[in-house]
Length: 229
Image (spheres, rainbow, N blue to C red):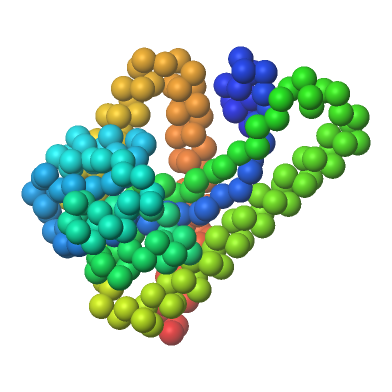
């Protein structure tokens, strides 16, 4: 939050967490990805940093408007696309076309935000500032819970109605290449922008610490549960 506010201070706005989608999927693919060669020339809709990573691996990245995605995938204008997760993807109908649904590698969470004009904020009494903070926190927590529930229910529906869908994880050589390309993209931004570097280093430091608890809690809990089923 300190680094967030430091970034937005120049714009005279305050930023607060505004909800989270949780882990996002790696995308819908018309064909299975078995090697890096399968990415060469692949036409895919995937924006942002993940798009830059895929482009480094030979993917023909495009950013088609949302309203044209279903038709583009259906007609073969694109071979694959990344959207969000089952809860939102089911409304788009991609599961009716592409049989391969790849697990996430690039977006463990998407944090939305509330932006508030700093001058307007300062006009509020401390009581109203606190009320607004609590309201934003409540809405943020609700969004995460609603997204989790929506994806759990949507995936159950997809699996029931379209049993041909195969959930896949990218092969290890592909994942290693993605990791290498990701580091190169992020390091290049860090080299050009001191503010980016400060945030990036802070995130890496926290992730190294938090990953240990994630393994101890979620990861090993799931493994233990599967062992006794």
